[in-house]
Length: 255
Image 1: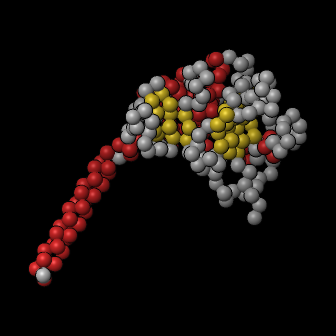
Image 2: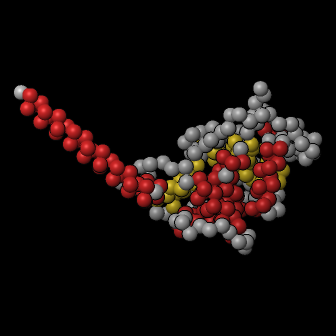
Image 3: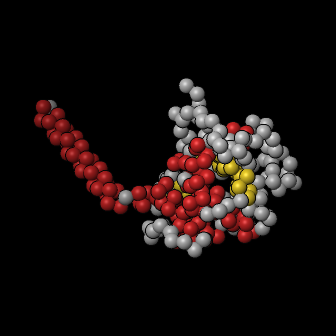
């Protein structure tokens, strides 16, 4: 009886040791291959089994990106459109860069989505001299560095108090409208280049909402999926945000 117990214990010990060795081997493989292995895991329909920070819908299916790669890709596409030097994107799938440059085909909707991450410890800011809060002004400067001179609206020195819906973030100096007029396929493509860039950089620039082309993205959504935007007047191009990208920053809270 004692011998049988001893044998069982030895067998359990061997199984445990074998399990630990297998786990160690798997960990080594994952460390060598990195996040690219997980990013490449796909279901039968081509969708990703593991959801990375950002996902781009390409003609070949979904491609996952970490946040840094998404920022580099969207910045590269924006700068190349202006004929300027772009960051290195050698590690980014060519299909991703092509889709971001071409924009969503037809009414396919946004091509890039990133998980939301809304900071909760930001202080409330007052409107500055140009009508924007410091956070919104930092966003404006960041956009100008990548996209150059833009047609902007939705803010003014001293602030704005009309022309937008009730409780609009424009009235707090936290929102900027970037215009792409008239409504054409080329301007739609340019608008999506900006919208995708804003979503990819949302975490670092405290972006809260992006609205464009009947869609909106929210930093408060952990899944980071774009949703349909229901305009109060479906026949109005401005209210549907067909002719401009709306972006606003987090407001913070008072202690």
